[in-house]
Length: 270
Ligand code: DGL
Image (cartoon, rainbow, N blue to C red; front, side, top):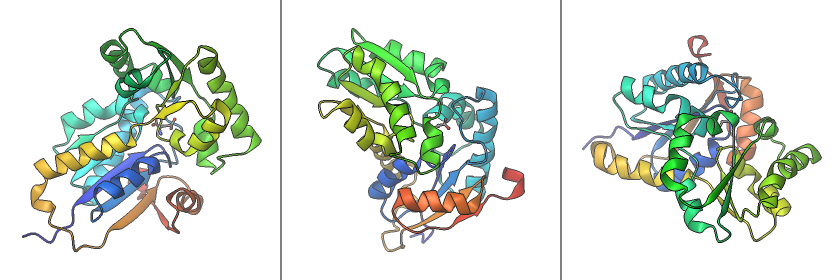
């Protein structure tokens, strides 16, 4: 029996992927989790797919060097831009995430679903294919949200600036009678309380964090079974950033609800 701890590498453009990390920790209580916030390059939402694919490859290489047995792309935008090329290049389980169109279509009672996501995600071929496959007769109203990721990166979850942006971006969806909102960017679950305050208690919000962690657990059990007898290993996390380590440590501590130190990525990965 191996004593090597199961190690999962997770990355996002910034701190949004922490909304997924919470679910991963619940699903795999004993695993070692390595999280990279690509804060030096955030936001991804307005960058080209080529740029994001390059960053995704660089961060994946770093995580594999750190011993990751599987990679979670905790970012809808990077999944759309880079999941296929990462899977072609690397021989470990690579799990991405995409807006939860299927469950939202099943949940709506008004027949209208709103999607809040980055412009990069909404304009991707992957998102178009998702709508083609699952939208059926449901009307899907999309809304790009420039500026919102930056609020969350500042740890600003409730100021008047954030409030106004959320109100501006949800208004067109609510006017169209959407009763179900897809949080199609991993940063947005941190704004769920504010979105509820603005959109009202009748709104259903759906994100993909729990589904992704279930899929990770399933694949770990099937493909990495030799690494799973780690029940006695202490659960641990390591946090890295391509941005300012002090600032990243502060925001990560706020959103992870525990005091953590973020380390700066080696210069070759910046
Ligand atoms: N958290 C990301 C996502 O899920 C990326 C946001 C951004 O950097 O624009 O799409």
